[in-house]
Picture (cartoon, rainbow over the protein chains, first blue to last red):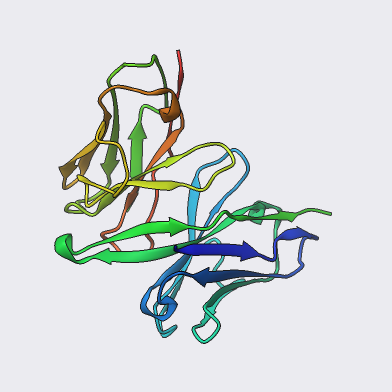
Length: 123
Length: 107
């Protein structure tokens, strides 16, 4: 069974830092690109960051570029999001998401999501 | 690529046929997915490649469209279908942007 379990969320002051982790199991982690998606309270889904299967390529939304760093440790089946210079607008539930490619239609999908971890930025 | 959804919310009754539209700012072929999200839960993949039903998803859900205009249809709304629905484009990587969502609630 595929499982993605996020951890590391919590309350942090503006300007502070936090590292989120996502522990993956039930699949060959090193074969899949992974993503972080967040959702502010009462708002929609916002795409945050992506990393290729081998970690060689990364992407960041403009809203977090220069402040967040995505990484992965394929030996530990774990995805990370290092967040620094946090702002009130970063307050959200952060989801770890697996990207699968459905070969028959050559289409990517976000097929498995973690349960999310809440980050609250407040003084 | 920007996505818009309409309506932003709707009220419907059990048994109703419900249609939600997603429009992309430029052509995305068939690289569109639909998700269902219930309060306090993670989104759940319903449809990918515009019209392919994810395994385990009831057949009352269907998707159609290509290019810039897409539709999610629920043929007969069930009590468990009251939720928020999001479209997502997966043509332009990255980012794989999401639509703003459509909330379906009980009339």
